[in-house]
Picture (cartoon, rainbow, N blue to C red):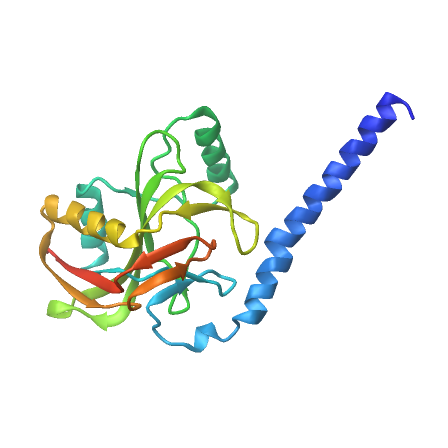
Length: 233
């Protein structure tokens, strides 16, 4: 076999392997999880998020009471950026941020479902230069009203420590740090320091968990409580 033919054969095999990986990670494995956990959408207002395939995701560990404008304003004053939407352009920008070690403060976050809906708003705070290390905050408006008739928001706060492969599907994803209570406290402390909170209180969340796993298969532990902050009007 000539060297040119050998290289062509290698290229074909690599392309076939890559296609097989894409089919497994982004089609077959997600379909398996969708079939396995197809009943999760009937569990109304469960205090945990899910991926679009039905894999349990990050717990709900924060809450806010305020209008959408007040929520956006509060995060902005606290130094958090609004996350971009997931598009081909933003995916390329994430890759450039990782490869060339430069900041991407508005990098997208993945979709998570709470009570059957994707997050209404997503915020982040970069840690260092590349996009993979950042503080994440997703929030969903809930049907439960807060004080003064203002909307109540459920949210999940976590720390993205780097990019890797999902332990459940093999797809590319961000891996979170295991101490989600520390991230919950960090977010609420940021909002308090920014002077946008009137008060805070604790409510029951998912319950004490020492062996939790999120949508990417990352382990986490928590005392199971959610902290709710009342935003200034």
